Length: 263
Ligand SMILES: [Zn+2]
Image 1 (tube, helix red, strand yellow):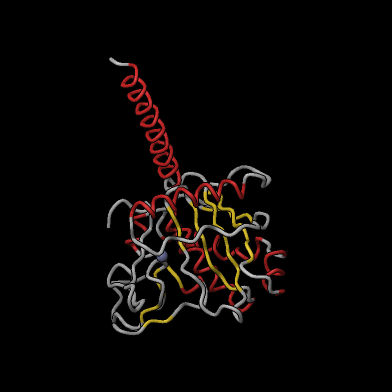
Image 2: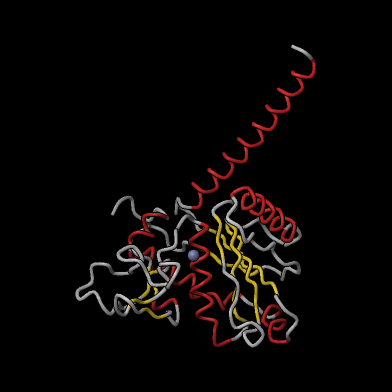
């Protein structure tokens, strides 16, 4: 074999080994994240999206008791499904992160999306490597916006790869409980749950986006399914829940995150 060919083969072997190691690493972390044998550690990192005093104050004074209803929600719902774990998640608040996450590409080009996803994981690593304590299982970056400046926030996202979420929330105490609904939704995306609403009108999809698809009569539903996002009042109307007390994990989501083995 000529020397050039040999080097090229060696380079390809090294690249394949790295790709395989990354794939095995993400498979293992995914398998662990939905084994529900030990609590998952979730760290929330606040980020200020603007310079407004309300945003700066919110980010500076964030404490973990503000997110207690997310833990309570997960405890209540694992209990309903008979998952034998007392505390499925434990939430911590990290120090504020001062850089903004890379914005997702506006095109659907898979190569650009893959590059952005790698960039996001790199950014997440770089902006949290100096934080105290052990690396959490799930990292959620809470990007706070002043609602007076920005009444409509960008889309939040939760990625299975790397178990990372970028959650856009409002720096407004009246929005705290609704913020927690969005945080729980993105957290479950990182564990493999999929959206269950129609993207054009946000109406939850029947039956998968309903908390109680078998309820009689079907409408109005008493609560929202966490990945369906809204409480269906009729086939064409649905409202945003006020808090996680009005939200359930439906059977289809429970299957995706491996709380149950079959429907
Ligand atoms: Zn979603």
